[in-house]
Length: 461
Picture: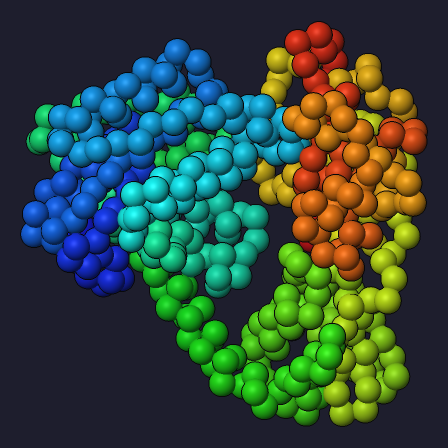
């Protein structure tokens, strides 16, 4: 049953072709062990070249090392070569102000891409199941998402494939029992501090009381949302040549054509235009999109609207003109501690809390960035501001050497017009954190920390 389901999934999404080289991500957990065994069974018929890959994230010391040995032995028992590596992900997260889940994801995907390149693999296979899909749909529904978000985990994206995406975890466990395959269990998957774990342990069981097949139902909804999202994208692609013109560094939207579109397509066009015209990473929030729509439906010629993603929207007779703002908004706001400080010019909110150093990163949530500092090393009040001439800091993990912020932006390939939009957390004259990029190593929490200052940056909704 499971094998037929996986084969249908592979065929439906065109995941594999005869002769493909496939790097299989194997954590040692039940899903990845099942995935490796399924692909090993299919390898003869499809002439697949399999290569297992495992990354020890360094979060759990000897326990993580034991899992790496387990994967090495499992791959050897199946006659599959393996790449096993270890990365100090906790240090990586601390240096960049990332949460543990976000940092681990970055490192893991980079490792898998490098492993695939090293063995000339055509595909990277991941062990996400229908349960992971259902959990993702619930999480995004709770946080607020459109069709694209509710489409959940993509079965295929570039060379990444997920052959188990239509298979439930109970089917995975049944196969492992039937095949006599062992697996390891990551204790962090049971901790209720992470939102996904709470969805798995609390919300899914509750929903199963209403629909015992809720996992299958939600996975099916994700497919439906994905199909409808693709249909709307196709419709938009047909309208774009009539409605949008590029002129230098600006986009011109035909007012008459735009106002004839259904609201859903108007919002998509606006978001697409912002991504195209704005600085790298520019995006419109739901609130900003609604504000822009209201402006476009009622404004007179000559009026303009400043969008917080670094763009200006202006009506010019029969056109709406979207272009980069001439100057970034000047920002220098004191940060409440503890508490929440909204920064409307940047579309951000800063949340601060003082905690015991053993508390670690806050639980997973709807944040952009997180960092933990040594409270006693901070001079209050903290400020959130944009850059000033002469700014410099000591980037964590770079040998304690001072670096001009301008040089850091150049080295990090931050586009020129985006640099004034990068928020800086400052303590007096010192930059504590180039938010979303790198912390200053002098202020990070460490072994001698008595009180930790936890800073979380969120998008304003």
